[in-house]
Image (cartoon, helix red, strand yellow):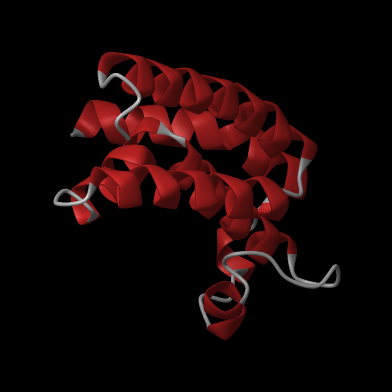
Length: 124
């Protein structure tokens, strides 16, 4: 678990450095919750970074596995949900550092879905 947390922190540093994150000034309130899938241009830098982090989570391996686990009885629904979250997350990304990570994760996600389709004979 510690390895996962350290890896997540390391991956997030470029994004946090880009917005000059100040944990002392962070508002953990409603703006993060309200706009966690995207929002207006005038949001706080911390809110933008939170939105990007949330989107990157859904685009990564952990996000894909979460979606499949929530739809484990209906794999067609799981694939459709992964694609839906991919599109939502892709649109939500704002920061250039996040975009770079997102583009790589989207390529990996597409490769995973292609392998899934191939290995299931196109059933899903």
